[in-house]
Length: 382
Image (cartoon, rainbow, N blue to C red):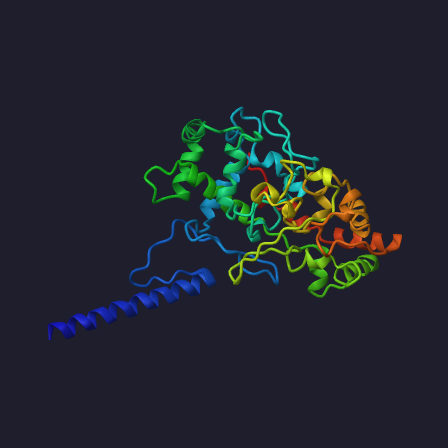
């Protein structure tokens, strides 16, 4: 009899919890939390994605669930010069929103004045990157990438190598950060840690979703969104004449992508036919990690989202504008890159008239998302 009462009580409680969970789902939409027995409470307010049509949900690391509080903390950290040893630069110094989060320089310059060997990559839709940086085959997570500019010394960027305690002291002594770190990491007795800094920065950067360009509007049925020239350029881009789509395809205009539906995490790097002088160490590309000559000059194909705003182009910023990029590929490369045995099979010379080249440029410009570059959610809070 006692066992029967126990089972009855258990199922009654289970029913009540299920009903509570369903009510929570009704009030909170698809992000509602089902409060069943044994589930833990979230570390903050779950972040609700507002994704453009055709965009899959980003794959978020299980050890860093994205929350509103982490995103807000990350926004402050991203723009705070406290993250550099001499307090002259922040992440936002080399990743400016107006430039789709790049800096417009040939190569970036660190807080001590040292030039970086490579061009700063833009951060449009960085949540979907399968690998980070230009050529590192093992740098998968934004959390790990965030340590590179903070603590790297070749080159010096933010210059915080061996100054971790200084960084943490600066933040812990700021009353605003005391409340923000506690809100973002409520389960941590002492939330001030390098790990939590990288988690917050990564959470903020994952919200950089861009998918409201003229091209996107055209795809959604607004056929007036693209000019006749841009439409001709689109047909060239996705056609067998220019074949740009092989390395810059899909919703994010690149060939390596990560999202919740990704089955095979296929990583590709390309030698795009630049002159061999562009591949001298430390700009050897994938070669710097594998030491295989066949990998020299191979880099990750970046997304072309907002490409109009991210000049100059290539890993070393050696091509100044979009028309020059088009000419590079029409020629099948630059200098001795046209005969480089490592050159990608899709980089080959072909014929385009001057008007067709301009059409292709107009299409690339149609990937600009001004809503993204002016969104107040991404702006400097200071």
